[in-house]
Length: 247
Image (cartoon, rainbow, N blue to C red; front, side):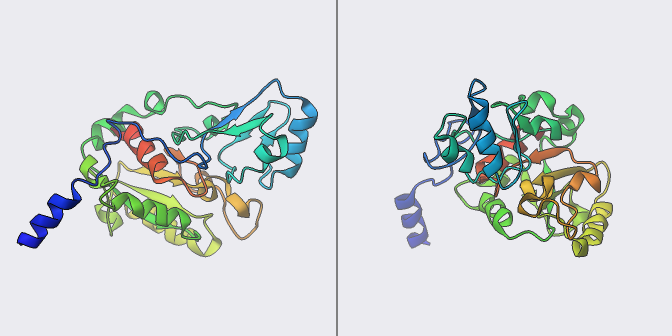
């Protein structure tokens, strides 16, 4: 016991003070894109041509964060003239349309459903469903349970059974083999319940966009309440979205 106390005193508190204190991510992190609307059309077209996700709208000069894998090729191609990725990790959205951005997103807290805050603001239990994911989104979600993030201090936990959950947190492009299992999990969650699409795969199909083997859009199966883009979403992106939408 004395060794445990000694180790605790030496280590100190490792839990982040976020959201009371801001966190600055490393400069190589790609978050909210800054878009230069006055960029020449030819440069924008070059970026659109090289984009593997077809997420750049050359006419409206926007990027679809629901498809974007944040590969950064548009920034490289335009040499920062059209797109510059910032370190802003606050990417959650309450509507699919909000993810089609010209460089900003509506305040998530203002678009969250107030009855969800009333119901789940003090305790939110989620069942995580990996619907044919590559394990990147799943791994970065698991990180939230480490001492640094300590997700449970906010009253948010991931549970083993959908019967004990308030909603589902879905990752992966939703393969045909996982579709029924996902629907069964959704039906097993007692109402009222919430649905979270996490990662570009569950939002649009991600790298598998257009494949006949995946659904590629969770909203085609069940109504989505919260979108968390990224490939994978940074743990702070997920944490920010959950706190703003439910707390």
